[in-house]
Amino acid sequence: MGARNYWLDLFTPVTWQEFLQSGGKVSGFRDSRWSALQKVKPGDYFLCYVTGISRWIGLLEITSEPFRDTAPIWKDESFPCRVKVKVVAKLTPETGVPVKEMKDQLSLYSKPLAERCLGLAISGAHRQSGRQLTERP
Image 1 (tube, rainbow, N blue to C red):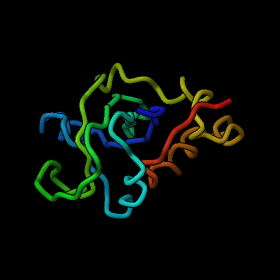
Image 2 (tube, helix red, strand yellow):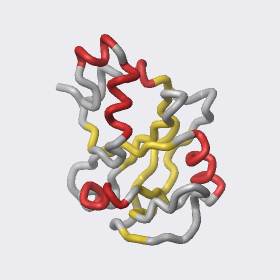
Image 3 (spheres, one colour):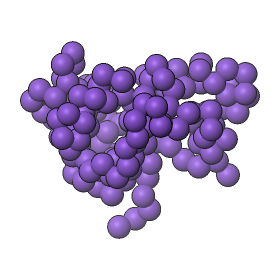
Image 4 (cartoon, helix red, strand yellow):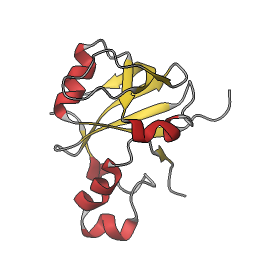
C-alpha cells in the first residue's frame, strides 16, 4: 500500500448523529463531489469536521472504493456518492478538538486568512468536502 492520504469529511451536528446512528459504516457526499471522491482509496483517512461548532470530531478509515447509492442514511439529503468506512476515533461535540488548535498543521488554511478570521477560512472549505489535506512543511 502506498502513502496514506487524509481527506476532509464535513458534517453538521445532525448529519454526524445520523451517521453514527446508522452504524458509522458509510460516509456520503453530494453528486458534485463524485470526481474528487474518485481519488480516495482504501486505507486513506477522513478527518471529520463538524460545521457550526468548528470542531474536529472523528477519524474514519476508508475501506472501499467509491460507489453510488441512495439507500436512506441521512434524513434531509441522500449524499449518493459514498464510501465504506471504519470509525477509528470519535469524539462528542463537547470533546471535539477546536479547529483553531490545528490551524498551523493543516494546508487547508492559508495562514494569513487563518490568522485574521479562521471562521472564513474553514467556511470556504465547506463547499469542498472530500478535499485532500496535507501537512504544512
